[in-house]
Image (cartoon, rainbow, N blue to C red; front, side, top):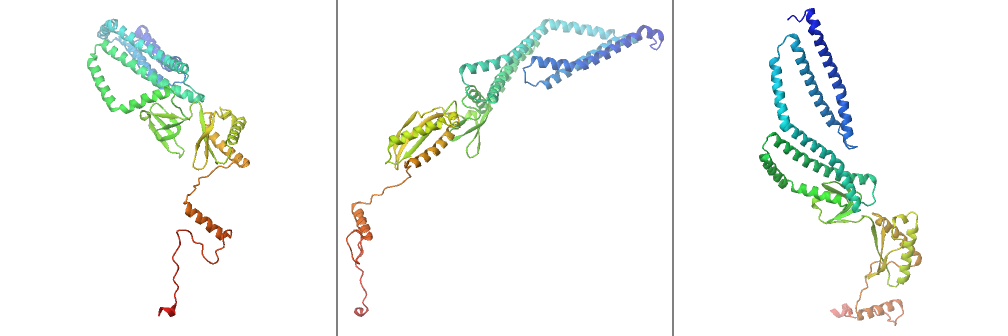
Length: 421
């Protein structure tokens, strides 16, 4: 057949051109709309705030390659017979392949598709249910204290991502094994191998698993959060960072302590919900304690009315004010009041500044460490007489030296040169 004759062109060539034009138009439309459609669909079905741009790009490129392959196959099958190429063997092979694929799809493909769709439904369902359940559970238990919206959101996002990621991994592992079983793969050895790998990972990453689980419960039960001041063992400081694996503290010296969550056994939170100002004020033994305690109470109450310091003080009057102990140098008076979280040190510093000024104005003595020495009766009497002699208040001793009892020295022997010879 002469494919360059006018008769061929009128009979078959026009259809070849039409086929090529349709293929070119289909490829242009596929290339133009695939990326837009996939991006729009992904944005519609994924949670707000998550970035799936790279995943949608990969999906779109896969669809573009498959579509291009289908267009090329359609063009080849449509054009070759019109230019005189016998493709009956190819078409028969394709028919047999299609029949085999159809039979396989009828027996296994539908089940695989159903399993995949169920996994997909569980995937998107859990991505919406788990965050909502976490928020409801935490709110119902009343675990959240007053904190910034940014910090609260960060804590919630940590829990959401951890639980959601764990649930999705479990779902797709189950779906994957079920699909492999449906295809005909013996999953027994796979399960055994996965068990061995899991045991090896469990032994090798015990500390990591312990850190992650401990971090999850620390965040879930709100033991402490960023900005709290806590004490872990011998280390105390502000929480600079908290994640699912570790806690970072910064102490007063500026040292940064990185503590794996799994190593935390007992933690003391000094600033959760409210804090307590705990003061011990010492006064001299000669002071009137009722007067001193009244002044201390009044100073606290005046400070609680101060526009600057009042918002930091929950207790408008100290709920504990008592004589605590008789010290070596003075009487200790204990005073306790509640403050806003992490404000107790500021309140105590300001209170000490004020009470020192008021004590000075009222003539109340704040004792300093001193020791009273006991020297015995004889030595004390001797010192008294010696002091009186020096001051002239005691009996006149002439030119004789006033000697202390027990410290008398033998008379000094005089030297006479004439007698020595």
